[in-house]
Image (cartoon, rainbow, N blue to C red):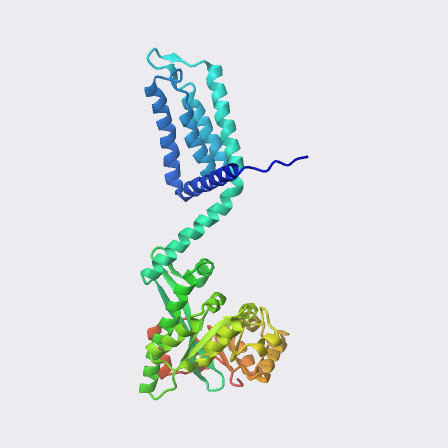
Length: 411
């Protein structure tokens, strides 16, 4: 059998029709619920008025009703389309004269058949577009979120909070992790969980990372000046970067410029990356470039992802940050202690230091000291706080929980 391939014109026509259909769906879904209902109501009313002033259905076929019906199908789906089609059937049927001038009503079989067409075509349209509603709706949601985030960056709505990091060896705070926040104009303060998925799926991740690098270095330099005035050791600041950042050829230059601009010592900056970056092509080169600057590299959330001895040996990391899920399992008889202890021994054998995140109570603190964690952070010491509260911790570095004797004496 000879297979007939479509002509180029047919292919172009199909592509254009597909694009038109998708744009129509996007336009309808992008319309707010109230606006869409208003469009449908105006479409129904306008269709009735057009037919009325045309002289009735004997003078003009009421095809205009298909516009609000098809719009309802694209925007709301089958149930709403059924309601709109029934209303259209009534408006185009018993509520419209065959001839307005003579007040001649329509034949009932005529308007009943027309109402049947309204219902049938409306449901067919709804059935055809329903599979596309969710993906296009998601696409529009992402577009709206991306626009909002881009606008927020331009309006300086993003800022950093800082969670102090406590050294178990020195018994003092030694640094802080910078945590991105969004002061949304209507939703209030938002954590990364509310926007990072959208950010990471777009080029916005680079804009946000640039902000974090610049602001963190500026703030750390300001704290360093406070520490020097009080004859205290300067804190380091830890920032989180995305795996996508490692795909930027200018990442090391961005970091270097921020350090120079704010006259911050490289050892005062720690860059945290999740274990997943170990699978990225070219990650080694980028990390080595950053390492040459003197910046410390941290494996974040260690113990939950792609943990591998070969990866740790290959990449130039300095610190393992043990995931909070492992810290939550610590207890007097918990098997989680064995796993945490093995990570500490692994880190020591590779010449790495450890930071335990998510430490929340005195028992975890006591066990952490026994297991040999180098540093910890969590609600037991301090919650993420504003930058202006950090200088007080630099001056008086012992946490209030320990000053008050919250930790048992044997700790």
